[in-house]
Image (cartoon, rainbow, N blue to C red; front, side, top):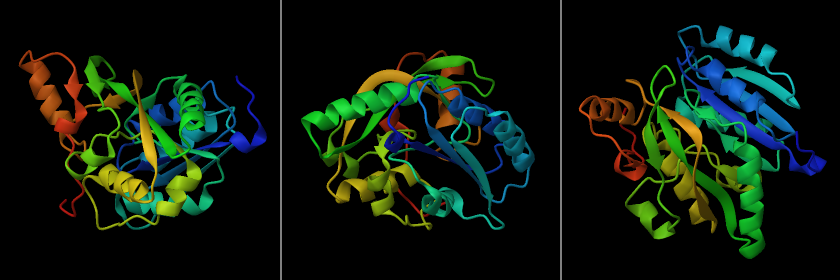
Length: 251
């Protein structure tokens, strides 16, 4: 494990709604990071499945974290509502929001934090760093590579291309909140637009450092589309901005 200075705490927030079959793997991937210290905040958004049981079990097994907690909401607030409930508990210098059906590779945090600091040495307006990913099946098999677009703030008006997760300065995320809980699709697009409107910029690292799970219930609809394409024999890298919706209140 690396041993950064105490003020280099990384806060990871996992919002979860009815992903009991996936959330344990997401938590385990945070606990397996080569970076420390990490605090993990899981927000269960009034799930009706066995999510809370799976979260509790996974957190009990997640040794090595500096701190962890589960916030259980009584009423469904949506992903941005879950994020808003987590923000008052964030103590880290760095911040990652990880969807509860996705997985970080073990070196994700260490690599992205190092690259973020390198980028910030060149340009202090850079507050977040995002990567490519591997698209995986519901059971974890590799499907194809998912590619993010290089950083261009002008593109944000037309495309959603910055993924969740991305490694951010926590202060940047906190100052842009609270986020609009009426937005139920394109939630990450809303978050990034808020952040960039405050003058922050990003940096793209074209390496597949997390696993993005494709399944029938992805909020964006990407999972069904990609699985259908793979089943038709349409392989190759996929540009993620072609699959993600812009911010909308539609459900």
